[in-house]
Amino acid sequence: MRIAIAQLNYHIGNFEGNLQKMLAAVADAKAQSADIIVFGELATCGYPPRDFLEFEDFINKCEATVEALAEAAQDIAIVVGSPSKNPVIEGKDLFNSAIFLADGKVLHRAHKALLPTYDIFDEYRYFEPADEFKVVEYKGYKIALTVCEDIWNIGNENPLYTVCPLDELMPQKPDFVLNLSASPFSFEHAQARIHVLKANVDRYGLPMFYVNHSGAQTEIIFDGGSLVMSPNGNVYDELPYFEEQVKVYDLEAVQAGSQSFEQPKEKMQLIHDAIVTGIRDYFGKLGFKSAILGLSGGIDSAVTAALACRALGKENVLCVLMPSKFSSDHSVNDAEQLAINFGMPYKIIPIKETYDAFINTLTPHFEGRPFNVTEENLQARSRGVILMALSNKFGNILLNTSNKSEMAVGYGTLYGDMCGGLSVIGDVYKTDVFRLAEYINKDGEMIPVNTITKPPSAELRPNQKDSDSLPSYDDLDEVLFQYIEKRQGPKEIIAMGFDPALVNRVLRLVNINEFKRYQTAPVLRVSSKSFGVGRRMPIVGKYLS
Image 1 (cartoon, rainbow, N blue to C red):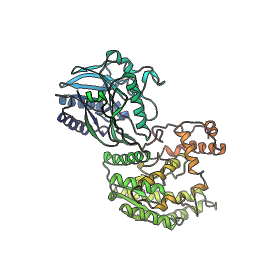
Image 2: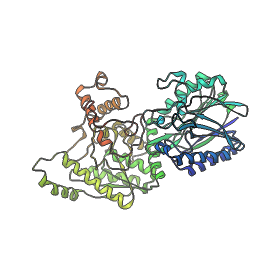
Image 3: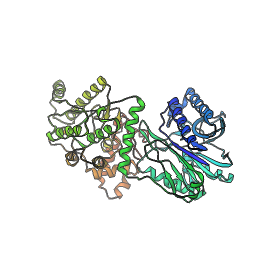
Image 4: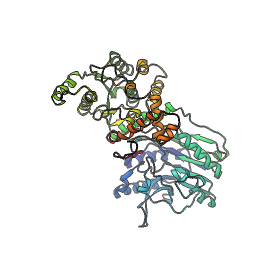
């Protein structure tokens, strides 16, 4: 038995594109004498389709794609993820299914039983969970078909669920397991997947073929890393990250566990490659070609520009330097040098006259009140107006350059530096932005060293530094990580040794700035808990405010 894994980059709702991509993979697998080819979860329509699933026409197109694949299932079996209509009136209208196609027809449908409803997942909104479990027989083999989360409740140890699908299938004595997944990227998740698959193999003693998506869907990124597990618990093979690939395996060799290979998992490389993938697919799948961003000479805009250049090509990233009277000469020079190092086009547009026009218009109405954050924000908003005007005029999509630390505590200006169609590093804490810059420079100085080593500053008033109004980023980021990713409350964080005043202040800033984050661009997700669809907080909640 020869089994092909098809790790592909799908496009939500692009039925013809997804179908053609899968048919090409089928032809490739047949040329390599594969008996079965396996695609990912909801491959017909892309994942996550969200409320598109509520449109009957959308579901009909999914079914038409399945029918077209069934016609291609000649001399090879095709296993594909797709929504299936629920014939029973009671319950949800759809199942999330793994569909086994052979001899030109649907041979079997295995429905997903464990429907995640946490973080970015909301599957119980659309799907009915499976309540029966049957293996599919093909060419003398019994195959356990599972969908993504179905393998994440090993022996009923996950308190989110009350059934373990593979436990239900084991009495039917399957020979191997196929798992169709759409498992989103976070920088720790690849290792977690391996841990879960090893636990499954240890429990059941069966080879397992785990197929993941590659590519990005708006803010959600899929890293690939599809896995083949031998019964001895070894990772027989792990496919590349952030790449499409079709690869064929001999079941007997996997059963024997004659090799073991895992991809390297270096955090900064993973984050770098994930963000580059996220930018590239956001632009490519929406039909955009070029980006624009404000380049300040600071670390955040420098890293954003570098990643955009690598995703879109240097000629497609326009950098705009907009110095004010508070901008230091070295910041302008650093920004200009970065653009030159990468070969990106750039413009220098001073904002003094624009800013002065706002001040002259508003001064009679400010009633003699002193300079404060209002005037600081006017500088940021002057830049936002310029960037959005250039974006509108030339069709460049504006990239937001805010990091996760700033977004968390509201250290950004609505309709100013928080403008943009995509937040590139909004899920990267400031301390990791510095590490990412060092990774970008690993083969030579592309980001000027001065940009990395100088004290961070918004440069919105004389001699301003971030440390004037924020704790050190080392302390701030650790408190934020415990609160946002680990969901620890103030008592737990203070018990770790942090100053109570610092903890209470930081947590209050996070909560009172929720209204800003509701208005920001989609944030490319690289952590286990990013701002956006995976973190849903009330704006007017009283907790810690």
